[in-house]
Length: 137
Image 1 (cartoon, one colour):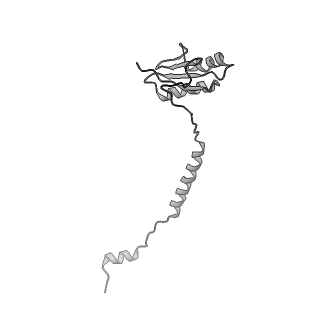
Image 2 (cartoon, one colour):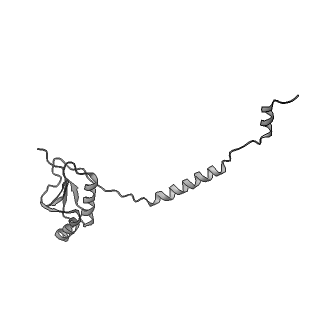
């Protein structure tokens, strides 16, 4: 008795298998790559206290007001650029590093711009920094 042609061809072909060893190697290499790459990320945290709306949380007496606007910055009412800010803060308050700085962003100012200004203030050596809200009219 002869086999049908389809069964004869199936028996003559070698059976193909998929090896898992190359797949495991690739997954291991990817795992090691991402473990090493994650070590180079620079995570920095900025501690910010929420502004106090009312109460006696240390008023503005003796503080320097730094206003962040769309186009410029104002330090105690004087307009200056972001590049000039650190030098001006060091120059004016170099002896008094406990000088309080109130940062007041205008509505519509991006968070990135506020953080860049905050970094300039901290790099100038001033650590008593807080954000102030704009009083409602």
